[in-house]
Image (tube, rainbow, N blue to C red; front, side, top):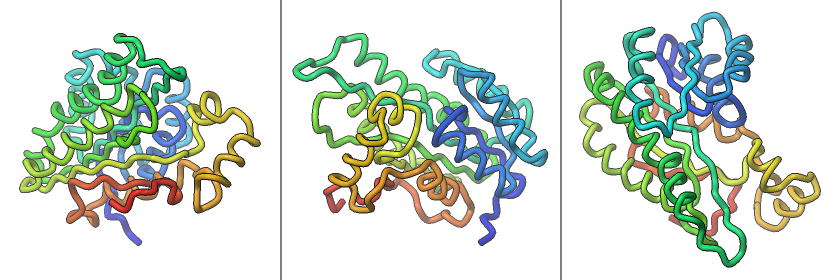
Length: 252
């Protein structure tokens, strides 16, 4: 299937590893020109070296929790390409707390800044250019908003879903869609190093919790993100679509 993405300009945050890196690679394979953003320049440079020449990769290193970063990111993207058709808001992370802990105030503030405000600011900075072009695709990588325990990252996920739904209604008439993808357990640095550091722990959890029977790979989610970023997905907006191998027990 032709995703009709040739020549589109895509910005992928958190592109240095895992899901973000895979999404960036898939978008490039579909013909997109890319802005890859993260904090670890060496990893971004290695990604850029792997991309086809048609991707014309622009590397941007920023700490997106800096309230002034969004304007610099916007200026870098528009200064290089003159447009931004696709925004993949991928940077973020879970903040599990020790049993019985409610979390320190600083952790709650940092989680909200990273997992909600940063993506919101970048999106708001780029929406006017999308409106002027009459086309835009915004895809947010989020997470659970149905908490099993106190985790400061859950509240920003819920905030993102509500904000994205409201935004989708406001910009839909400009040819812009806004959707969110909460990943289930997907193989990544966070999962492999912090949450489930052994193959045994990953296998045991998957056998118990995942109907599909395994923990997903980044490509299992990236294919959906690339589709939602395409012109073909023009009538899908304001949605929260889980990619978790069936782990989530709710029907809605």
